[in-house]
Image (tube, rainbow, N blue to C red):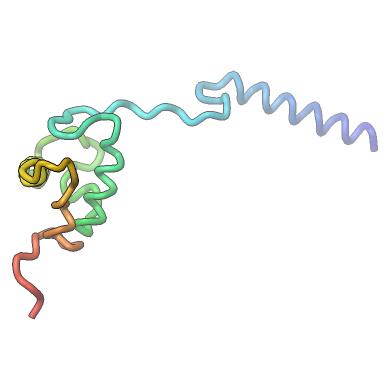
Amino acid sequence: MRIVLSITAAAALAALALLAQQPGGDGKQKAKAAPKNLKILAPDNFRVSMDVFTQALGVQCTFCHVQGAFDSDDKPQKNTARMMLTMSREINDRFGDGKVHVRCYTCHRGSPQPLTAPAP
């Protein structure tokens, strides 16, 4: 019984030693690459913003981004999103109180096209 436990413990230690030698094997997640081609969003919170956009518009990332080339500007929806962000920031700035009054969801309500009239 002692031999089995000793062999198991030795195998576990060897596996941990191999794991620690591999890149990112320290048990911590690898740092993600910094985003590229940001023109409106800040790099420190862009991921949160992306999650908000997908919920507000009811779309997936590839609605605005080229799969595998997220920094590409080939899809016109990406530039439209930039214009909409600029517009909503300008509207919010006009209130002068520093609060967010208008968001993507204000008009989109889970739809890729802004809802400009109530449902029939």
